[in-house]
Image (cartoon, rainbow, N blue to C red; front, side, top):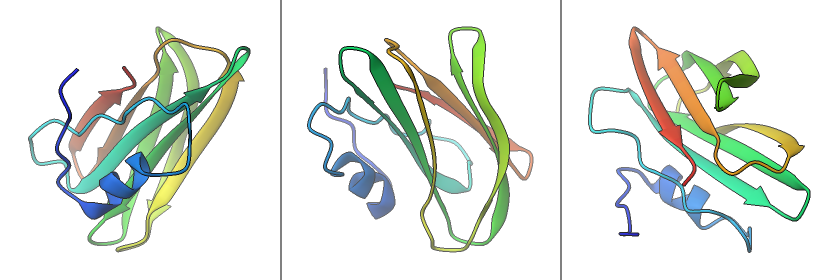
Length: 114
């Protein structure tokens, strides 16, 4: 799998977080989503912890939806302060892949764990 380049230091910090068995985060698609986002999944034999990080250049309200297949795990609004990394984390029975869809100011992006 090729290494992904990140557009922000916040997303790079997420990847370097101290999770030994972490799957690499995926960069947001190259379009006008106004915040840097990352997703990470850490699993052991029985559980997965999925974390989504969000950093915006100005204070925004971001809708966050985390799913596994067609099952919705989390759906909430997060107020993200300018320049402050916010995270949404959920722990569930072990999953192979999770996705996060984020929306703010009419823009949306979806990213998934590998």
